[in-house]
Length: 404
Image (cartoon, one colour):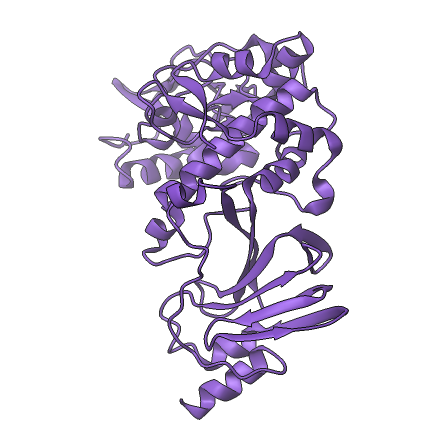
């Protein structure tokens, strides 16, 4: 083996000298194999870290690159110097490499100041300059901690149960479709990440009596289309009065989502309205971007003195009708949030008008607006709705089924 790689691996993990090689974790099986018992899910909980400290009691550490297994008695902290390892082996790291796995007899491991149930895996990051940390745990442990992050652990149990079914459906879909690996073009070693991109998961201390109960009472339950297909179950904070279909927001159709639903239940809860203003120059840049991305078939030519106006609008219309001179342009509203971001455009339910040389937005809601409205689910649970009835309202093209 190349001497430089040996030195780099020594730097990477104090006290060991593994050899760089092709490995595959034994827990990477097809979804149906996992479902024979309690399914396990792998969540990226640390991203692009230069150094990693993992602590626990009676640790078992495995270096996958040379199948080196070591046990530590009592409390122990293991340090991984990812930056040095990645820097010295950059030319060999053409794809993510599983480097090490750790577990504890207690079941708990500490990553920095957070504790996680299950195993922690160290993988080279896609940037080839650092490491990612992946938590492998049962999906019910994952759901129990997620509920405190994606909802609120003190909310009514029926709202938490509805969220548990939706989040479990999304996670199992990501596991089965191997979407992350398909997007990267290589094996990613994780099913989804703990972020708003996928779902915001928690750690051991985020799970409460109520969130564990919500997970246990809905164990194995997912949303399927009427044809029995497992598709992602989306959710968001507040729809602002009406939910949307996936293709209205992300361009692609998703089975089971045939229509949006009215949702007066979130009205008056949280921040009622939001406002945004766009200068004329910035709005022109937005239109140029939309034309380059082929969202618009043609681009308005703004000349000095040319009259510009927006057709009378309401927040539930899907498109903006913009008049420039004698020409009309139809602009899908979700493009505004896609280009300007969630800070300037918090939701896709808004109305637009042109006044004083500026485009003024006034909207309601928070989030993409597809699937379950979480504030709406809260209100319905307070009204006495059960979780099955809540899910039936927000996912009319789906049915609930127990898959394990």
